[in-house]
Length: 126
Image 1 (cartoon, rainbow, N blue to C red):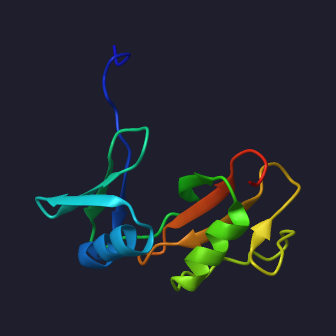
Image 2: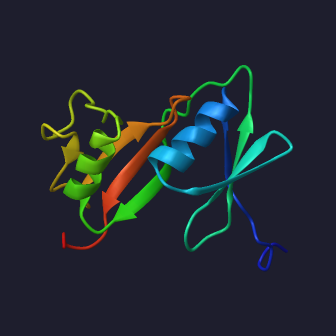
């Protein structure tokens, strides 16, 4: 029934202007806005819908993963842009917040609404 339907994902935020600035200016994504909602245009897939929700509760799981060729460079650049990385207790994370050696290297951060995002090593570092 849905085999040829171009499905897309979405998530809520509590502040559309803050999300627009973060996803466009900090993460460098193409972002469009229509009817008070955002669309994140992510390479290789359908746009992701970001919609306002006044009683927003941040996702407690990773809602977007960004594969990167060099996780250390990505973490360093995002840190330079003011993005703090999560340091979850009980997880084997280095000083940068990167979990290494338990699958692909991965580091988590949040958007202004508190939703969890990650950068994840795709293949060996370049």
